[in-house]
Amino acid sequence: GIQVEQSPPDLILQEGANSTLRCNFSDSVNNLQWFHQNPWGQLINLFYIPSGTKQNGRLSATTVATERYSLLYISSSQTTDSGVYFCAVDDKYSGGGADGLTFGKGTHLIIQP
Amino acid sequence: EPEVTQTPSHQVTQMGQEVILRCVPISNHLYFYWYRQILGQKVEFLVSFYNNEISEKSEIFDDQFSVERPDGSNFTLKIRSTKLEDSAMYFCASSPTLAVISYNEQFFGPGTRLTVL
Image (tube, rainbow over all chains, first blue to last red; front, top):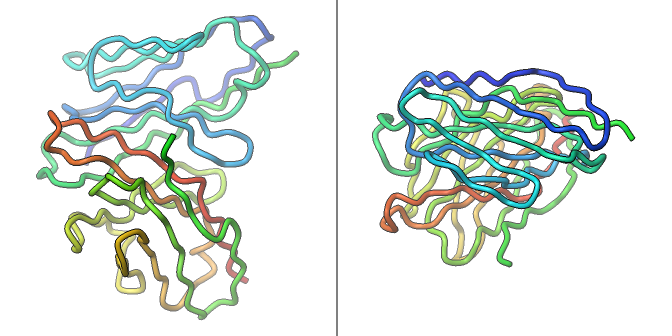
């Protein structure tokens, strides 16, 4: 099956800093999503971005499908940005239908005041 | 804004007991999913469901698991005889019809934390 690698695994930053999280995937995808898992365990949708660039406030994401990677940018970090960021993909050639997402192991981000 | 809901938020059970986890997907969505996350690990796909039948399942989804859409709103995951290793957070998700230009963003519920003693 498709492989998803996220880097870095851990990141500690001071409030106000900027960060870039990376997601590499091993095959073509139909779907790529970024999630933030908050301290209560909830998975918050950040972006649905199988290709192209999107921005939402201080967060933006870019997926270069031909090179099989996606980047999540967080600017002017706040303590509430802390948590685990997951990238998840849907294998383009898995046979269609309701395909399950394959998640990476995540980046654990800690923003210190 | 519509959201996926799950009940209960926490469930504690004894090994060998049956549990049913409940989910109410977003009302106009047609595709439903269950995932699990063992503490400290990544989220893993269990099963997807469309048109009242399983569409895809992972190796994790063995004979002890079953899914059902008992009515027009609920989607359930049943674990027949729980084991210690079933302790995890279980997430339900739903996505809109794929007929809309291949748009299939999945929206996740808040999860049910299952503890098997």
